[in-house]
Every structure is written in structure tokens, then in C-alpha cells.
Amino acid sequence: MELGIQRCLLPALSSSMHGWDGCRRLRAPSANHMCYGRGACMMSTSWRDKQYPSLINFVAAFLATNSYRLNFLSISPDFIFNNGGLSVAFIFETGWDSEREAAVFSRVNTLKRQFKRLYVVVVVPSAEQNDSFNQSYFKYGMEIGRPTFVLVCDPEMGFEKIVKIAHAHGVCKQQDIVTAMSNQREQAVQSMDGFLQVLTSIPGVDSHDANALAQAIGSIEAIAKASKEFILENTDLSTEKAERIVRFFRDPQYYLSPKIK
Image (cartoon, rainbow, N blue to C red; front, side):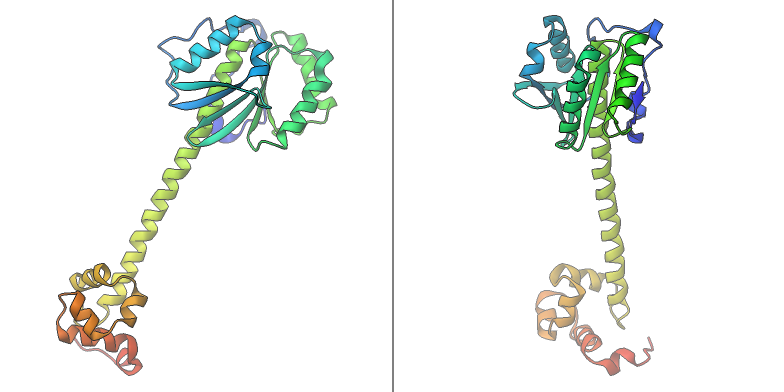
């Protein structure tokens, strides 16, 4: 059960949990796991000290298999992942206990104010525990998706979900960067097209001349301020073309009069 999963994470979380009678347990990571990519994982020393050694060994092996660096630190969440330059924090409750519900949800409310991207993964191995958690969730007035809760059958499955979520955020971040770079390139091309259009509208000035002006002088504003002598010194344009460029930008009568080529 996943409460409030963000849309961009759905592909990475497509392997959703089985029914309560079909919970699977990941015995150990294998070479067949998808390699999620290089990143860093910070594990809370407090969380580590409360877990069975077998789970810590599984976590360390799973991270190593998927090229993550593991560091043990004194941090407020149980885990912080940095993947693709973006940090995601996790609370990882490896066993739901209704007697601790107040402490759990109090901690959630505290950390969600500190971390923009916070997820809470809770292990509920039975239908009864699932029902108990749902009652507590609404009892403490949680807002769906703020933060997102992910319910799983066992701790190993829970940690695999954590890595998938962190990886998905990193992929989204990288895609955003690629999109932004693509947009910048497109804007640069459009800007250059406009630049060439302005300069080649001057009688006698062709694309070669426009490119020479761009490389030697720069922007339209700089070309408009350049003297004939400066243009001749820094480009291979003829005296006639240099004079036309200067007149085009400084003589309104020349600019507005009809041009016959």
C-alpha cells in the first residue's frame, strides 16, 4: 500500500507489494538486480543500533551491489540518500507497533517540516497490522502525500523500496537538467537566428558577414555602438559594408528609407 506516491515515481515503483498472503522476502541481493547508479546513502547510527545484524548486512550488501556509498552518521531521519545531486530522507519503521504510534507520528510531523522530500516506510507483515496502521494514520490527521507513506511486508522489501524511490528522484532530477539544457540550446539557436535576421536585413550584409560580426564584436547592441574603424579593424568586411552597418544603426533616414538591392 502506498499513500500519496508522486506521479514521477510510479515507473520505479511498478513492482508494488503482493497481497498479504503472498509477501515475498528478499534473502540477499544478487547480480541480477538493476544497477541504480552511483550515489551516497547516510544511515542513522541510532537506527542501525536498533536493528538485527542480518538486516544491516543485507542493507550494506544491497547498497554495494547497486554502487552506493554507505556512511553511518548521527542524523535525524533513518536514511538520507543523495542521488543525482538531490537528497531524499526516509523514516524506516521495520516493525509496526501500535503502542508506539504517538512517537512515530510525532517524529513524522517534526521531520516533514525539516525535509522537503521525506518518505515513511513501514513494515506491516499482517492484515491486522495493516488495519492498525490505517487507523493510526487517520487518527493522527495525516495528510495524504505529506509525507508519503509506503507499506511493505518485510524489512528487506522496505529497503528495496527506499532505494527505488531515491533512485527515481535522481532520475527525475537528471531529466529536468537535460530538459533545461535542451531548452537553453533551443533558445540560443533562436537568439542566433534573430541575430542573423537583423544583420542580414542590412543591404549587402550576408550570413558570413553577420557571423564575422558576432565573433569579433558580439551582441547586436555592441555592433550598433561600434565605429566604422572598429569594424574594419576586427573583421574582414569591406569599407562599404562597414559604413552601411554604422548608418543602419545610427541614421533613421537610412534605416526607414526603402532599400533596392
